[in-house]
Length: 408
Image 1 (tube, rainbow, N blue to C red):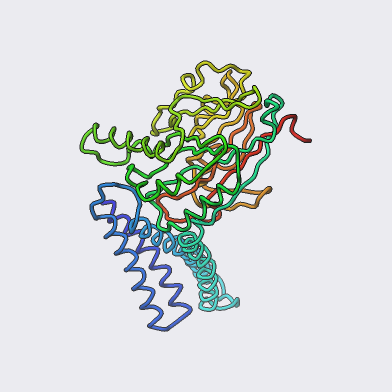
Image 2: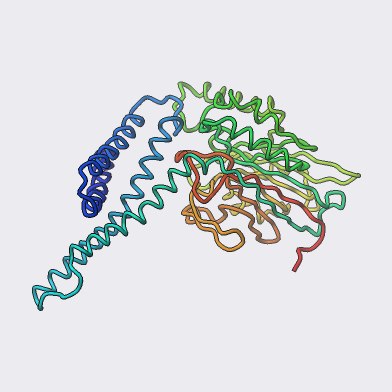
């Protein structure tokens, strides 16, 4: 039934797009090419999503079939809005002219052609953007630099630099050279430590087989620290048994170890310099709604005091709103990911940012401050479902910690 509904909606959008195209051209070749392209995209999508996929997810041909459908339907939706609006206006004009003298304004056919040209021109923008996102945008890595000030930062850590990456989703990758370039970019930051805030894979540990050595090249003076994200637990795959699911999770934990990463499972470590220290705290995934809730802040921070300066990793930023920001133990800086910035949006640095994901998550991209605590929500390193990024580019966060009050 769901397939029937989808096909009907898809074809309805295509009918209006066909009308717009037919209005501005009489070329049978153009019309035939459009119809053929529409059917190929629909047919490929149905084929990809009706084939067995034991590992689940949106990898390979599935992801690209979804991307093409999204691009095509986004363009056709915009065209439909314009053409439907013009149909409504024509009905109003027709009713008015039956009651009054015929209109002397420009003819309806000429207006129809103008609206069709306008609709197709505007529709080309999301169509081209989504295609660009699939082939270029998803590897358009950006290094975003932040400086945060803390009165109680230990003197020995004034100027301490941390790099954060999140949401690798290795099962989605299709260009290893681009990933190697990003790893070099991470190492070029020469940060004191590197944090990875969850979702190493889409579903299964074997997705990292081809990339363990690549990500194992990430180095930092004080090491690489990591936590698990909701996708790392294998909850989105049909396993033959709970034992198989648990074995997959253990294998994934082993991948962190092979790469030399320090995986923190509701626990903490200390970094010491000149007799002073900061605590690095890692909680397991905790998310609102139906997401896994294994994060235990009380356990992770056991033994810490309010006076300890703390950097916390929590994959899902909703845990910050739920508990972390108001915890009496005072977690100075939280690093999260999970939202991906929805891989789609508009950003003008320092002035404006928007993405549909903001209607679900209060903290969805960048630095936020509340109650004297900070959170950075990394936009993600990889991608999931739609195999691309538009406007919300893959991010490498670099945060410098400074001693003293924030400048006015």
